[in-house]
Image (tube, rainbow, N blue to C red; front, side, top):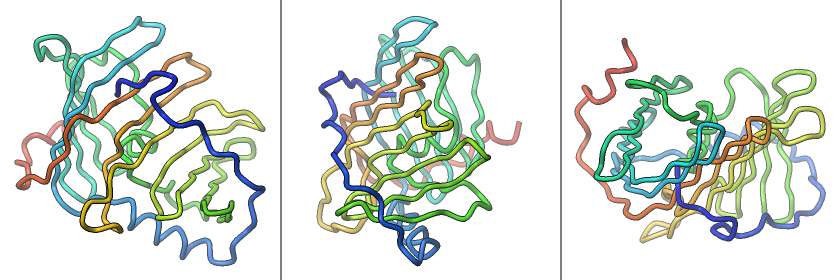
Length: 223
């Protein structure tokens, strides 16, 4: 979902080894609150896709009705439709033909700078210098790891199988504005699937608060 070149995002920080924290559930609640939009918002961005289907790029928009409804529209040249999706909670619904492969719901939220922990799984919290980390064990071999900066902003997410990362998200938080603890849409984001050999990147061009969007634009969720 964004125009990111290899130099578009800062290199991943070199982090010290994780030090377990005693109140992982409390840390999870704080980070989820910090990473959740509190106002309807219209986001416009440029996007780039590279995968087995080919290479595509264009412009796009996201419409958000907090706390859990998102409409994503990817547009091609001349604002022609490429693909649309509705994200409600932990479910994603596609509108029309699915032309390119988008991230799974948890990582699609992560591309929006929004932290949505896997349901019914207790996290393992850790401190890594000024960063915080939450790890969720999905199965004996699979885990999802989220990394947050000193202000509680989601900056990285990773799906691992064994010791190998198979899907990654990198995001750069936007400017804090007048309220340094308010949710921020990221300036840039990049999703990579290292198994399917695809990359989706976004570069935000504008972000503004908006009146609540009409519920009909999210109706794909009930089809």
